[in-house]
Image 1 (cartoon, helix red, strand yellow):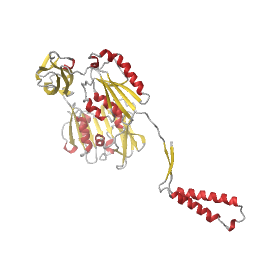
Image 2 (tube, one colour):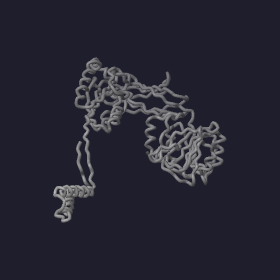
Image 3 (cartoon, one colour):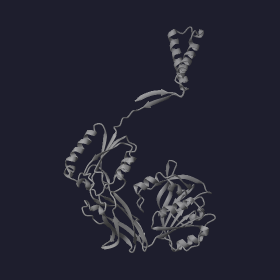
Image 4 (spheres, one colour):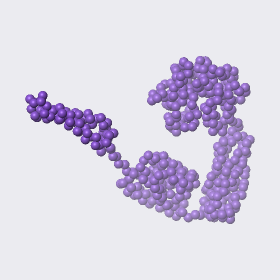
Length: 489
């Protein structure tokens, strides 16, 4: 610990403080005729105390600060990452990798722990703590490894990363690029057989997660080849025992990479399994990587979502874009004065700023209620809360005029209707503030809040987002505006 005193003024000002104390004591007590009857030792004590008091007062005018510096030394962090994919057992040294190597790696870790803080991980098709010398993983993904290290040790004194692998990867980025995000030296322990053998590889199949019945949908097969120049292979896509597409692959050079597009017809509803395969060439060392299975969910039709706003607002666009990231939904957006469509074809309606002073939407609200169509209300400064409270949405708002609060969201614990991931909960706590009406909120006992309002540093019981039912019709209310800021965040 280091202790020091600092001031806003130059340090030589302290001499002026000493001079001021001495001058003040001298003027008051040096040869003062009124004090001739007082003994010299008592005068000395009085002068000393006067000097000290004046010096301290003058010194305090310099705005002194007491600075304390604590020094806490942490050992540098060393991360040891072991590739545990099956490819390490394919070479001649597989017995060494399975038995003697584990002992030697442990000796390395024990030696490093004297000077460093050592963390040991295994990686392959996923990242985990500890070592697994059974080498169970089917894939090797260096991207996941370096992403995890970057996230876990971004604020630590990371000294080095030691990666033990054969360098063969079949998922994610090349380790050369994946390691660029690590601000520490990366040392490699070369393992396995690094000889490049004759191998035809189906590296990746790019495809959509869903398709719609009767439509064609694309997929792309990324093919790599080593030591196969002059060979000819066939790419086939099959479903069950039926071959749907076959395309030739002419391998003209070494190394060789090509992307082959394929179009398929979605002719059955549900989760469909397709097999993408390459023929096995004569003399090929590994046939396992010539085949991949993919799954595509074929839907009969997309659900239609209706968004109606009292007037243009950025929240409407943010909600529309968020929903359209899911291909299962088709969104139609209208302003209330332009909407004259039947509501029966829609699976859900989102109403923004309705009812308001100028856009009460009585017919629209009545049609939605008659069709038993679920409604999500998003309120704002346009809303007329007297009319809104008559809708029996599960919450009523009492406010005089429109005064507003800036509120931040926080999630309610044990929300029963659906589960939120840890990632989502972490994002919610960091969302920027939205604008909510200032007033009293009455929540029905049947309404279930998902988010509540945090005003300043205080977590209140005021609802921000609730869910309820209205005669078996699902209803949700978001009591604020500014959702576009969440999407931007």
